[in-house]
Amino acid sequence: MTESTNPATIERVALTEAAADLIRQLVEAHGPVMFHQSGGCCDGSAPMCYPKGMFRTGQSDVLLEELVIDGVDEPAPFYMSASQYELWKHTHITVDVVQGRGSGFSLEAPEGKRFLIRSRIFSDDEYRSLVDAGVLAG
Image (cartoon, rainbow, N blue to C red):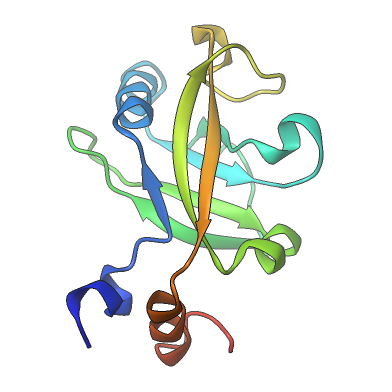
């Protein structure tokens, strides 16, 4: 197995540098943060950023990644609703940020910015590796 197909090294969620910079600002202002991607229409398809622990997750949520950000003490967990996960489990997600205000209660809204996701389907090697490791069901 090559480094790129080792399930321990396959990121399921990544950050652009712009998103990491904004997260650093939000953590400085609000403390540790978390993300939840619920799905749905409108801004429901954008990841929402909350103070860590302020959004209750449960059995209907899947933890995709603990996002480690340089300069931030605690990782930012990234959750997705189970129903959304069923549609996106074959997908690598990159959290990015753009100018403009989304609606909702996401922490970045007052900054005049909003998080969004960019995605790609896992390569065949990545997918097979995640299935073989039991991370994804074949």
